[in-house]
Amino acid sequence: MKRLLSTGLLFISIAFSTQASEPEMIEEARAETVAWLALTDTEQYESSWDWASALFKGAISKEDWERSLSAVRTPIGALKTREMATSEFSTTLPGAPDGEYVVFQFNSSFERKAEAIETVTAMKDADGKWRVAGYFIK
Image (cartoon, rainbow, N blue to C red; front, top):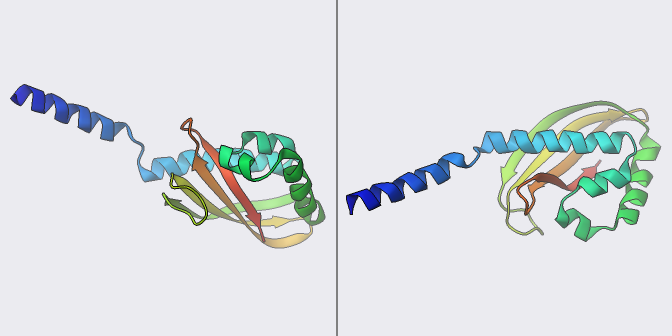
């Protein structure tokens, strides 16, 4: 009985030790988010939709995404600078199913918009990979 109990505790401790810590998850999500933003910066809007989460793809068609992003990004011109301002891990977001999310805010500047705030929400998709689930610029 003791052996069974200790074996069970071993499995539980292994399961918890293999889960990434919050800072590790934020870093994984940040790396994917920055790669995704690079696609938008080089006007690869179709590819940015392809790399997005299932939730994102269910909310907007590829064609509508390309049109919307082009309408927002073209007038402000090319990216000049982008610095991460904040990152926040959460398991709940308004209007979204429970899951693992990281909301990033970047202080950015563009050719024709000196100060902008880009908000990018990354989520852990069903396959365990971090993908962008939302993008907003103001």
